Amino acid sequence: MSTDRHLVLDLSVVVELWLRPERSQPIDQLFGFAESGQVCLWVSAASLPTLEFICIQRFKERGIEAIAARSLARRLLSDLLQRVKVLSNRGYDQSDVHRQARDFEDAQIAASARCLSGGQVSIVSRDATFDALGEFPVVTPEQALEGLSVEEGVPAPHALQFIDLGSQQRSIRPQLERNLDRVLHHGQYIMGPEVRQLEERLAGYTGAKHCISVASGTEALLIALMALGIGPGHEVITTPFTFVATAEVIALCGAVPVFVDVEPDTCNIDPDRIEAAITPKTRAIIPVSLYGQVADMDEINAIAARHGHLPVIEDGAQSLGAIYKGRRSGALSTIGCTSFFPSKPLGCYGDGGAIFTSDDPLAKAMREIRVHGQDRRYHHPRLGVGGRMDTLQCAVVLAKLDQLDHEVEERQRIGARYQHLLAQVPGVQRLVVRPDRTCVWAQFTAQVDGRQAVLDRLSAAGIPTAVHYPVPLHRQPAYETSCRIAGSLEHSEAVAARVVSLPMHPYLDQRTQERIVDALAAAVG
View 1: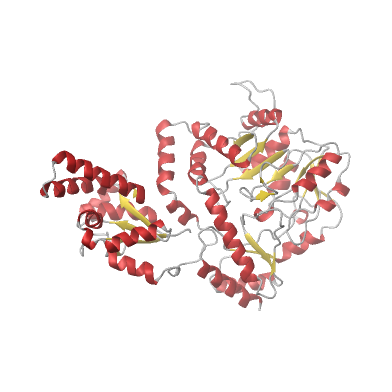
View 2 (view 1 turned 90 degrees about the vertical axis):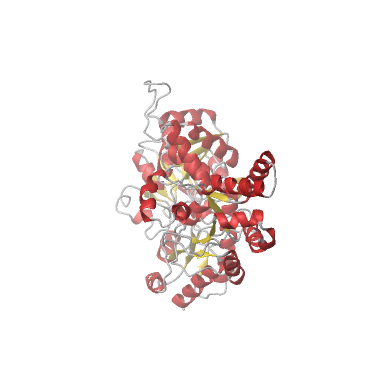
């Protein structure tokens, strides 16, 4: 279970837990809620030395020898740190906090909780005069427990977000700060150790032999095409129903995008239409794993093999974590590409991307192209680009990677709930997820008639939406005269006129989903 409820524990509460067990039952129950994932408990780093000091003094007052008192306090603190997360106190805050504070010690706790702003945050204290700087509610353990018990499973009212990166950041805050501080400390902002760490972990995650981190998902596709020698006079088959980058990189290489229609129920490229589009000029196929569901890669690979082993590049910008016939997106074809754009299932805080392959010569070529075609310092045997992923962005992705599996599970659970709820709504066509694969729901997208009117009604109801994508690429001005259309693109044009994406992220609770679906039902009714 993912939660965005946060309780920051004051010294008085922790001391009571340790030293007054006869009063600590509500606090014990709060820890029980935390262990079940219904709330996240925090302490401020500024509190820890004081906690240890107070406990040592109280133990000594009870007649415990000094060495034993220190040992007992250390054990209690060690146990606490296994059960809570720790908030950092920032040096640059201190002057302002001191000026604002009635009680500087209390204010340190409140200031450290500022990084949780946007979530449901309370400070738990026995001190009725606790100085929270006027920024957070202060509750007793009993009040906190009552709120959790009464409101269990019911979110507090909040503005709906299309994608909730704030909740995710709060959940990974300690690891995120640790990773970023490490980079700031070693100062290797380009190709630092985090780059290799991320590449090794992602290669292991996908099952590909090689992972090459790059500056963006677009750079991933471009570098892949360059490594394959795609250029003027060549054609690359892809779908017109995708983000523009898929075709953009083909044109940037001087080749011609050849557009093949999609399956109307998945919105992925239709394998049955690919073979007829192949000509002597065809040099590669780029299927897109749209919305987080992998295209039919085995069928596409088989077609490519029948035609001189054409390379297949999976555009998996939206599908990292998805599984196709027991294998992960990224390691399903000659080359796999993904994006770490912030809204992706695994995103950074800027631009980033990765390329996957098990082909050694291709991996070598793509690593060289990433650094201006360089195989050693100031020696450039091939053309390249400045396509490296920054070390700081790799550090961000590493912080998120530990919980990727959990977030993928949450996306699938939330996607399944959407599918179930929308099955009861006439006028809404759901996407089909094939039985031999999973979907990570980078976007949750459905189809409706009269889309603009539906969008307007949803907006009036406070439901954020998006359209992925409103104009198929063969209708975009930059490609109308520079592409080749292979057969009818009727399905691409039809879905482009009907798709609508609803709020989707791993922290979307059931009540909010029901509110979204109720609003959609009213909008299409």
